[in-house]
Length: 381
Image 1 (tube, rainbow, N blue to C red):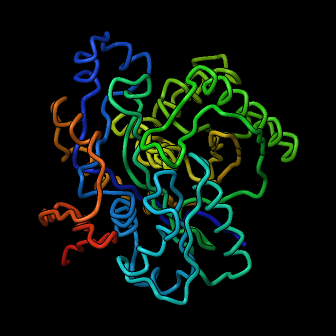
Image 2: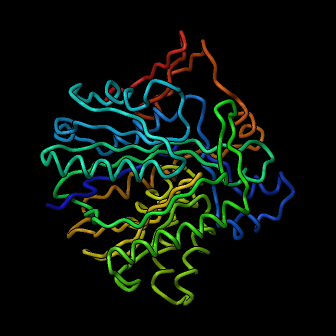
């Protein structure tokens, strides 16, 4: 039985900061960000969008009534959790009109949790072949004003449906794994901003790639030539490019062409933590030239740290099940922020007793926080 990605979609908020605007204001050569990090724009969440609303918007773009009838598990991966107890996944039950005979939970491990959720979903479908699993990754990456990590912020959500007989890609069975106890990137519960040892984190990212990739090759008995494209978790695109060069020194290789196609969306959005790798996947499938039955290698990394390298195999006709036009319009129809508006947004921390005007610019928006509870508005369709 083939199990894998039946549908995939993403959502990004309506606002962005041009990376050149940030560089000029910070008195940095814009090329340091545009070429040095390979970034163009940074998605910024307005105050009426949080991880819940973004996750709902991503999921709503791919769900049908048939999907909702078959979904008996929803997994929500995030490292931007808004509650230490209530799982983000439970919000999706009401906001997406999911049935209540369902398992709903939230997963956290830095940027790796969405990959873990996908593997859990695959195993669930293996035991329950008629079911479908909704998997969501939603995050707001924030490092604070004038920090080293500032240009690598972002916001957005990814949603996938995992099922048997998938329309997009089969998830293959072998994973290469590597984990260790390190502090390269972390965010204590009392801090609104992440902390990072940048150089060390970059070194660990590349080390963990090599370790998990070698573990995959050993277990699968595949060779590099058996993999048609490699995609990466993208905190910033240049890190993925440098990591690819560790195994492919020939820059004329097709692997570099596919890599460039896989980062088109990431360069317009920035880092979305759990969803970053899968935004690369959508970009490769929609902006690239992958043939049916191609094998794609995915490198997932979560600071702290754990890495997984695994492969998917595209099915016949996968391009017929993508949402390229919708995603391109989503990116095109955003509004550019001034540096002042951007700084005001990312330095504002929501508390209790807040209400927002109904803007009706997205399917789901945060409406208010009252009695320490979040309430959302759903656009009538």
